[in-house]
Image (cartoon, rainbow, N blue to C red):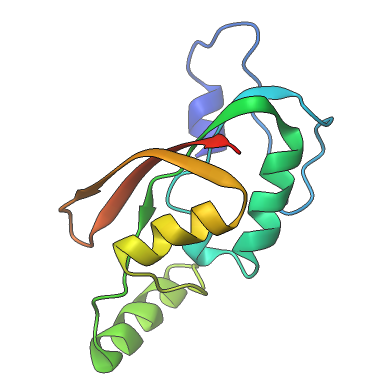
Length: 132
């Protein structure tokens, strides 16, 4: 995705990099907003990722964090889903219902200002929050 994005025209203040979400290379209070899309469920320690996002966000900064929510899937279907994701290179660590995901974001230092459940192949929660 980074290689594809880097081929397109971008403003001078846009930079692409591959980062460890729990150990970002950016300075404290560096960003007005952070977007993390469909990734928290495939990270081994999503709370650590949110902690580092809090670190790099300026006070009052925005978090945009849409994420798949798989909590509705039964055990057998979940095993199949997780197996297919592993085949294409994604290990799934978290399985939230939509309300659980929103609660997880709140528990990790953000004030959720808006969220909406989108119907897709898997339910997707679109979420906006500010640093609490």
